[in-house]
Image (cartoon, rainbow, N blue to C red; front, top):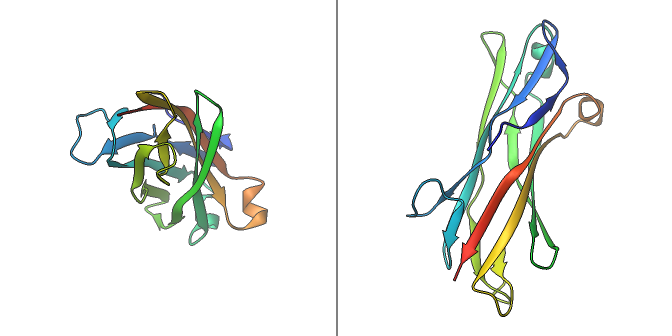
Length: 154
């Protein structure tokens, strides 16, 4: 996969970066883009904010949101993953993030990602984004990654 997209990207002033989003299946093989169900997995990435104005964001809180779309029927599942807090260290903010576990199952099981009826697998597109809680910061600082695909197998 590829790293995410961050803004702004103004070297010397303020640069926002997002690493690739990776999935880790509980007890599974790496990379965990093919997940057996029923099982759990987490999503991880790192957000970095640097350069001259990074210090202005020290202490700000950001929500990390995950949007899952099941490709077979375009069913959308939204789940807010968590919150990270900006902490300036040596002129740079580095915010590692790992989600709480997501669950997998069959359609109707009430799990986060479910294999559709009549199928042996479910395929999911994952969009992960960083959203500032402060509306003033939200209009300036943002990041997202829309390149992760997961397959859940029965």
